[in-house]
Length: 382
Ligand code: NDP
Ligand code: MG
Figure 1 (cartoon, protein in one colour):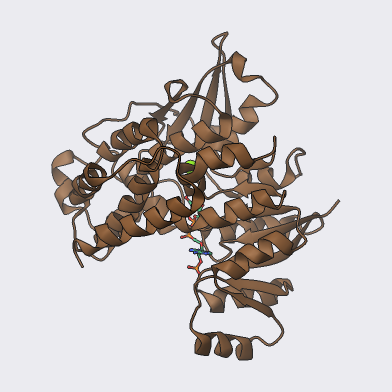
Figure 2: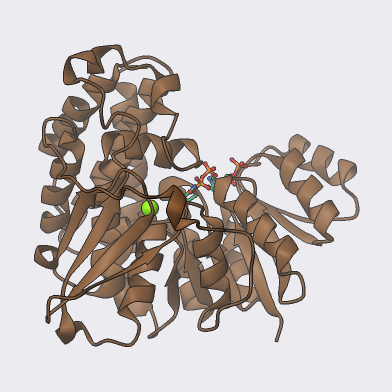
């Protein structure tokens, strides 16, 4: 049976990996529509190349620009604005929505796919960080298949085992760009240095979040909501080689893991093929080239945002949304060189000190609070 996919975030890093999978698996997959934010040239060119008719651009709101794009690509059915994407997700014919929208703006699409009763292949971890408590009530069993490599590994290792047999989840972390940089050199970190990930080729936000290790705090929250385990039973460990993508420790003491060369094509393929496995040559793993697999603890002096993230995770409510928005704004300020890398943590910490808890926020409140925090943190320096 051919699976029909709605691809959101088609122009990004996950989107690019998806197309490699799509080319290899073209007899099993069909694209219903694609979406991105503003990069209309790339999105429309992809749509033409792959014969996709419907295209959504959430970030093009200027009427003159919309007209120009319609004239440039008369063969395409074009939809503009986030509300049009949400409408498409609720009306169009597709089996699985791959949400690879970058950052906090991905939350609306997650809810639209779940409400429409479609399968959700979820790369956008921020959806769960911000709205996990709502997703938990909304999702059907088996409706979400994780794409984040660590969660894909846990999902595979868990199999059909009941949670009562699970002692804990162990999420591996590469350690990011600065895992061995002397701490006294952190003052001279530039955006170019932070945007270079040692093992993975990813979009800017997740690469920067790996450098601060805030990404791992997001992933602990993502695991909490995906697998329904308390925070006390989820931990992270640095594994610099990124070959073991995460582990499940069972109550008998056994650890099950999933291994491969670090390449997002594999978790994307698995999310699309699940519950089956499809033959593929895209990711090859030669164990002899990965002889040394090592582990170390996350130092709090090197990764303060990870530890702050864990506290915020425990507090829950609106606070994870506020922290994620504060980090997104701080990253933006760092990228435009208004602040230094070492200023990110104090800036986020001060946003958390100003934050007011809302225990169980609805989606509207989450979206409003996200925007408000982002704007306020950005305004401190611009
Ligand atoms: P990129 O920054 O490379 O790409 C982001 C994509 O999202 C682009 O297509 C962009 O469109 C689109 N986008 C941004 N904002 C919106 C919006 N408001 N509406 C619709 N589309 C939007 O990100 P990645 O591919 O790296 O990451 C995507 C998600 O997957 C993130 O949540 C990330 O944490 C997660 N993830 C990524 C991994 C990776 O290896 N890259 C690994 C694990 C998780 P445009 O080009 O037009 O701006
Ligand atoms: Mg990950």
